[in-house]
Length: 363
Ligand SMILES: Cc1ncc(COP(=O)(O)O)c(C=O)c1O
Image (cartoon, rainbow, N blue to C red; front, side, top):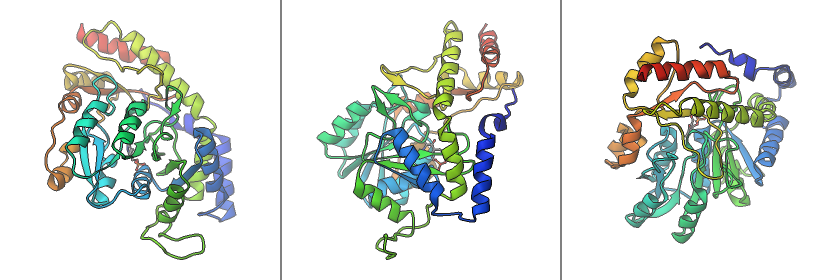
């Protein structure tokens, strides 16, 4: 099942925008970034969008700008890509791992309370909207308020996902998006966006992304270079015009998968929470003998993935620094998940082929 992604992501408008930036010779801190930030903020319904060099930079600067620092406990789910955790470690803060809800695979609010109550220095909660579905932000925000915690959202996989009218990345003190090439929208390279309604957080993040430099050119804090360049911003701005259509296509493809797999009793299809608009960055099933099923699909020409085979809390880089954690639901899930082919132009015929192959395997 070969996919020509140029057909999806490269059109005349994008090529014209890129050419115009290249000819302008204005490659950083120019009008394209300003326009992309403004358009992205408007699309999300927040005050400020700060374009940066990657999702990881957006996370790092979001945590730093809300005040997370050395020795602070940051509550994170173990079921996530490692980049949720590395910025916490880079700030010399402590990632404190929280288990997931077995249906949505997002942070379990009740386990969050357990983790907070056993923490000496609770500072921030950092839920992840994994695979394109929002965590239960209304319950998590309530808990954060009760314990006086900052809230930062990892929305790197969830551009414009919604839950009960809330948009991913806009609920907490700050949110982070990634534009890595496999994401629901990209900038044709690395890029990220930090979102916030808080003027001070935005000002701090803008400073930190540019060597800690303020508007009058003084270096008042220790920042590095986390800027997004003009070519990336131009591509991002063009892609923003398509993201709603692409998200709807992904969601429809997911409904087709779930309908066709409904009678395969061995498979667990994704669960959508009440009031959720799931943007299906990934369509992830659970299968009892996942590795064998994956090889069988590969033999039939179907590429799949495992996101992620090792939970974040079990990686050596974490264990060495912070010791071991036990998250039974997360650990069990890692042994069974399988991501099926998903992109905005996947056809009904391709989905049928995948589902028929799975059904045959279990028959
Ligand atoms: C959940 C999650 N967090 C953080 C990141 C980091 O984003 P980036 O690769 O743009 O640094 C990614 C994507 O790679 C991700 O999926």
